[in-house]
Length: 374
Image 1 (cartoon, rainbow, N blue to C red):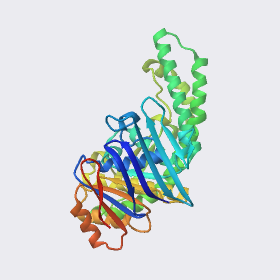
Image 2: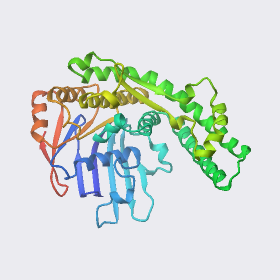
Image 3: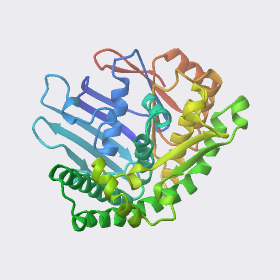
Image 4: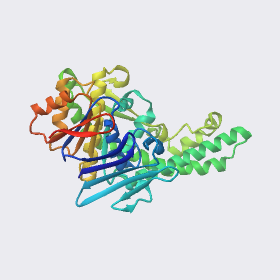
């Protein structure tokens, strides 16, 4: 699977753009702020029905215009066109081969994609919600039942929390009412927990392999690991934990027990990466996570996802950068999209690695894209 052509109208800073791609590596180079990342975001839209960077769809319409449209022509088992359009004041529309997508959740996974960006550093340094979102996103692209369980579980937690606030405000407590939402949390939360456990068993070997491939020097001899932290590890059943937490939850006005409190701790050796990892170690860990995501999804879906690398080169030294390009440009990966501010750096790497099929695009102010190198 690969993206042959992308057409944009009034998307972010692009009035009009029509780009044809290599089915291997595509690099967008140019100064900051000219719109390199917007190309990647348009590709992301066609996979996830939303922007990676801005959750408010209307803010992605070019200033002064009334709509945006994104069209992508893909080669799968047969040619496929995917379109995303939005008019101000109207609902967003996604079409797959001219057929409207009625439920966006059903579209997730049709065009598997992995995005790597500087914001992924929050996987290491951010809160547990960031790591849960990452894990959930990886699983959900290949498992629609899991996605449904997540949505139903979140609804149950929201309803239970709303009820807890009402109890607090009105100074009363109804066991029967809260028990209904406890039942829903168990019904959908228990399979979420089991699926996350199975996921890590499958995922960690891929992660360790990529960590070793990207790392160099002393770091390559270190063992990296991901530890799943969950209240459901406890021998006490989930439903009993919810019952025992009711009085405490009523005081704090939110649900303190459940898979929405899970976390995934990252280690190199015996040390948490968040607290003791250097910038280089954290960067290597993050890249290994994302490339393992690519490998895991590819195995489950039996196709190579699109890989988007947005402005990640600056904190990598040249040997590690060259190793990364060789890796993603190999037959192990499929189609790759890269942004960078330094055209000379990109060209030098490909000059030394002539076997990698690629195109380099120069992005200028005003959204003009010119093919610089073939």
